[in-house]
Amino acid sequence: MKTYTYIVEKCSETGFYVGHVPGFPGAHSQAETLDELQQNMQEVIEMLLEDGEPQSDAEFIGTQMVKVA
Image (cartoon, rainbow, N blue to C red; front, side, top):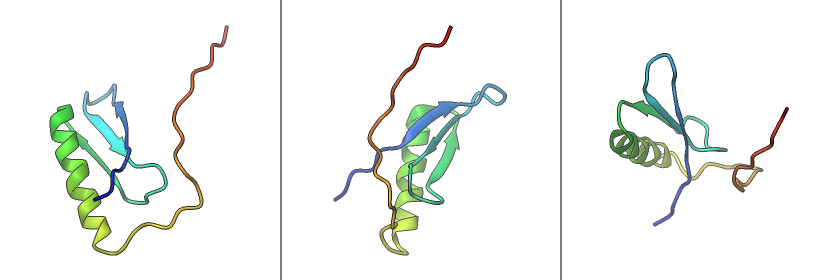
């Protein structure tokens, strides 16, 4: 079993949550709730893994904040 980290944003136009896995082409989904997004992301990752593990030259490290005046 492997754990994947995905980024979650909320679309201001639709109100939907949008998730994507950095460095994993095609691993994205959207949903009305965070619970639904979690399920959708699990399903899309499982489906994409049927074609094999993605090859990426980058490793997701995290997020940082910067203040701008």
